[in-house]
Length: 560
DNA sequence: GCGATCAGGT
DNA sequence: CACACCTGATCGC
Image 1 (cartoon, rainbow, N blue to C red):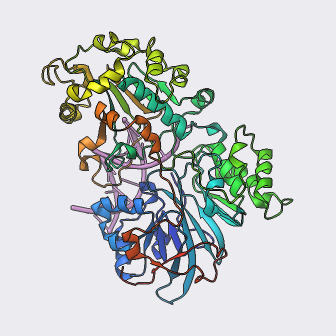
Image 2 (tube, rainbow, N blue to C red):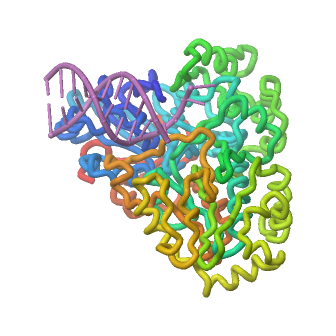
Image 3 (spheres, rainbow, N blue to C red):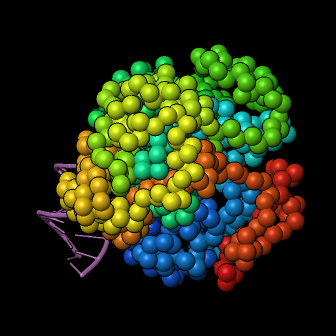
């Protein structure tokens, strides 16, 4: 829970992620992402009144955040007062005091934060120095080094202060399975199930409201948070897959939308600011403890170090305080580094994946195996190798198969897929079923005859029943930017069934491609064009880095 | 009726 | 333990 009060020391007329109290006087508002704890006061009558009086006050955020925010009618009054800024596009903003006319210019750059859809960090540059507000972020080791706009002249920018997401800034969260590890684990688990037959489907039971306002698989994004408990962290460090079986038919994925302790340290030591301010004080720790951890990574604690160091040296220096094993490769490239995001940004996976057999026209006795999904099995599954997949399943997961499918030979999976056209299960029935039993919490499976022929009643059983699901390690509540709550959304949008149709249209590994790929100086969307005026790069005289294009937004009252 | 806050839940 | 919500109860305006 963010304890950031909204204002930064260097630019106190700006308010970020807080919209109450002192922030009601801000000259400009910034929203890093659409999570409620970063939106305090955003729809309060006091702020609404202020907007009506102060016509020059705007809210700046990413295009995705704007869309998400305006999805809720409760925030519609912001519609004409939100200016979306493209990712990685330095944009000049005028901070005007409406009473005195006093004006201050800042350049803000949005950098992907990897926390949830639309989430960004804000990099401010102006007369009071360069400051970085991370919001909530999950960045893998080395990702800061790949952010071009954090660099200038081949080295990291001179950053005065970092306002840092310290949610897991505690050694007990030293390592958390990476996005990629988690994703790979889930993808393999899903693959191992759905490739069995067209009737083996995966039910993604999504409680998150806005993970699914997109329409295809490449946007499997939710804002649910996964995290892991410390004891399991240790165990998982040796595991290639961040998934473990938690019940007869349930799996849990260890994942976090916040950077781990080591990732935080990696990030901060790379940025090496003069000051660092924790945005979050985790329960059980104190500001002092967090600062004690972070301060040594700041410039002020490294008096012997020159203010600027070539990155190559920085990289080597990092190893003195980071006992990391695998960062060699990440930092060997000379700067400015090309953007080569190995790990996708903003790719988040669904918390709960119900794996089940659509047993229409099939006998029902699928039997999920018990115990852990073996890490070794996962490892031996090449991405697009169904044969290996089946071999790995042959023992422990043999019981998963229906009698019908268990009789099939190893090549049957492919044939199944080819036959899917004529044997596709009636997915509508599942959804309908789901709707009907929603209030019962899936406790009461429909009769097999209702669902059509030999439809397995266990299809709708609870997670400990015959179906299988993957859920978070510590199930967390989903994010609803809509004030309507999840009920405000079609219940079908809360669940997604992965079927053979999807398998045909695109390999499941396309999940891996759903990355947000930041582009520098990308073309401006029409909406952006309407709002922002592109101006020559040298118009902002205070800008320290004239080699970068800067967009200027009309923040002083021009009708948008 | 509304918002703020808290407790308890996932 | 930790997130980011949810619902429901209570209180004050």
